[in-house]
Image (cartoon, rainbow, N blue to C red):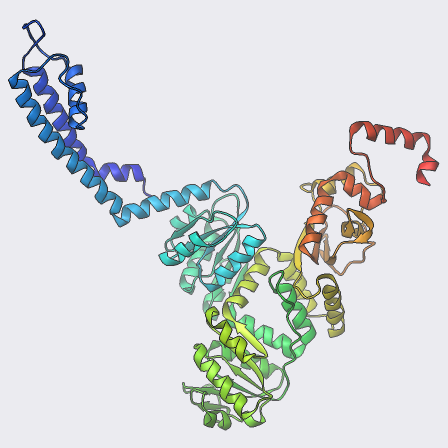
Length: 574
């Protein structure tokens, strides 16, 4: 990182030397030229008075002739000094303005400010490389959860968007190449409070460079990389990237879940969505013949999912698909009735419109519905700004690239325990998933629940108190779900999984006794999470949810309560 002070001094070298020479010549002339004092006696000005006079004269302030009135010779020399100093100062000030307007100097100042703001962060934060549609959604959710982040983005206009975004925190952002390891260091990748780095730029080579730098500079750091091709994804994984996200693989897996286990798919989508959003509907794609319009990476992923479920598929694409048998594709754009009919749209149960351009997808959907209105429609939305258009068409499933990516990133960053839970529910039955979904709906009604993790370690003051300082009555899971204002009421929180000694227990019963090292994944309302945090931070409330009795807070009343319990143990128990 360039030093701004030395950068300025280097550019100001010639103007400063010029000013120093002008001042030296002016002072030397005033000292050498003889003057006359108030009594008519000759005198010579000393260096201090000469420098003092030149200082206020060169800056055009003017306090008169000191210490005595000047002679004609001195005044002639002062006139020369005035013009020399004006020229010198004009040269210095002009150079200063040119430096301030210089693009490289402005970038150096911005980089210095950015580095200073990152160094001053005292809370845990994530380093986000890239600020496209995915990052905007992700940053909004992280900000709602009061988690800090730092942004690196190549385009300067997007950095300005970060500056003017309505975030709770002052977000450090800088326009630069995230593939530069030195810039990553300045952005905080080695900062002790940095908890993770996300490489989600539009350039997968830059994402690969970021994940490699994260592995080299901080191997223990949580890293998430976005890849478009299998080769880059495998390369990222080889460098220890914790989570490699391929949007098209994620879409294929999501579609496969919806085909194979719709209730499990809905549960997965609910727990992966942003808290507070409407609950996703139950999606049951029909089985039969499907038409895929646009056969890029998205289309390949969907076709693989349909093939796994034994569906028949016809592909429509402008490119010649040599990998497919001729009877399985139609070479066309897919927005006209003729190409759709040739693909068998009249006998199809569904259509997947997955061109790279939203206009083509909307046109294909409109034409297909005109031929067969009852089609099951899966639409790919490329730009978030076109959301209003897709809402008017009302597809059965709308896949928004930025939302898919942000959901995958958020699940990895905020609650890695949730990722393990979602991996385990895929082996559960549809009945089990449907029953759990009903419980979640009972907790949060029509909104996506919040998910959080409670870890009972020495860093948790409530755990130390309840498990060591006062272990009786024993702490059970149901106590963490008890309302601290009324022990007869339950918080809107549901324990999804308990991890103990490396073993995961799904949906643990409320009577489960808790122990040190337990990690509990909860789902519920944000208000329930806040109440639970209060219980774990205030010992009297922790005792209240365990015993159902209000505990004294002051030292005096605690002593009186202990004395009373010692004298009347039976009565106190009753």
